[in-house]
Length: 80
Image 1 (cartoon, one colour):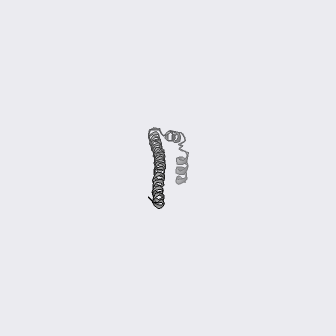
Image 2 (image 1 turned 120 degrees about the vertical axis):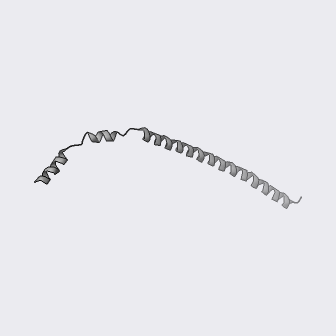
Image 3 (image 1 turned 135 degrees about the vertical axis):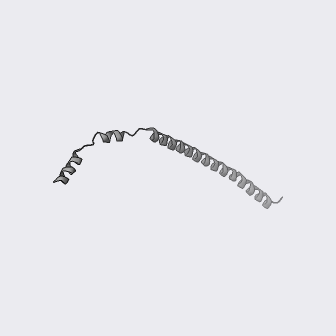
């Protein structure tokens, strides 16, 4: 074999080695993104369940402040 063929073979070999390193890097990034997505999905589901089962205390709070003053005030004004 000539030196040119050896050089071409070495270049192809180095490209294959570098390609495998890049594939390994891509797989690592893919796994990290998949784990982050799974954690985000579980957190979203947990929040939705929490909101669904948490009682609405504001309803009870607003009933304490209902007053008939406004109704009486406007009714007296209409009668005059």
